[in-house]
View 1: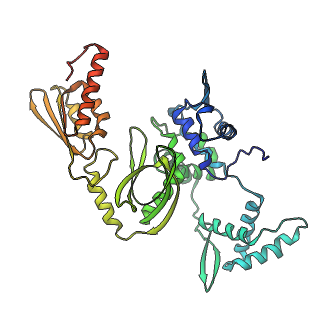
View 2 (view 1 turned 90 degrees about the vertical axis):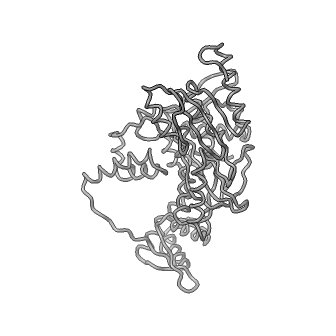
View 3 (view 1 turned 45 degrees about the vertical axis):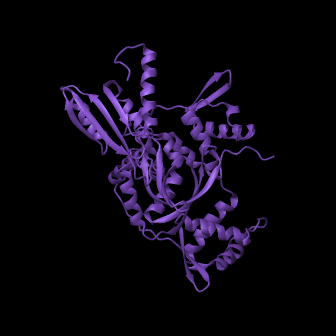
Length: 423
């Protein structure tokens, strides 16, 4: 039986557990049906080790509930960043990493077979008892070092010749370095793939993290769980390439999808992020929740990429949220509101948040807000924030209209007539 190891080979192994603990926080051991009890215990121990000081728990009749707890106002650094520093490695990983870089530093531009001969005859021959890595292991290590940017290869004839990737070194003053590190301190919590800014800070000067400069009112800590996925998507968008990935549906089964990534949509209120893409199989525009995307593989370049982006923008201009389709018959929504003369800030808010809708004065302190959208149901959460001002509500989607009015009537019954009359 293998012993417990705090390190992991694949980040996906703990990604869902971290999200369940952070976002839900009410699950007990028996709620993780898709995993065995031993698997749950191992992942829980790993998370408790990674996030010591940020784990809370409550006891209930259903069992012990664990959750991640943190006050973001007191945090300049996302505590979940540490989970990216947990990749496991073998003795061969470490040995070949330094041996290959040392060989190419002296013998730049040599082939795989030449590298293997030097490793065996000039390095490992000095040790009496050591297992010689096979050719495939060395080949895979070269490929890994090339993928992460340490090496590059050029094909000459039938063989690949390997070179160390040369990078210019700039000497910077300590003052400039400090400013750059503070910039990374801001970047790590605001921009996509913020864990990269966190890595730079630790690599250059770990003491800088003890001198926090920024405080954030809102930080979506769980975003970093998707950084690797998001980075591959952004690479594909930048290079106009298709991608293949697995997507978890409502039944938690993973469906393999091939799509052309076009835009990242970010819901600033809920924190959810979506990929807007063109589904190659069904020939339509679709959105996918990024936290449900697994194992992104960047594929071939797409011709006519700009045309897809142009068509998507036209669709998004008719959408309220993340629903995108080529639907021609849009849903029209009309809301009559009471806005007093001294409440210009309400009008400014509606003009700011109401997207492509229009608002006009139709009477004393009475205004009509009108909009046509692909899916009017997406507007309901926003409309509820104006609920005390709504006089009438009409929508061509009768299901949405009836549900909205029914919710008002239920609320009216709950408070027994306090306020306005029901619709």
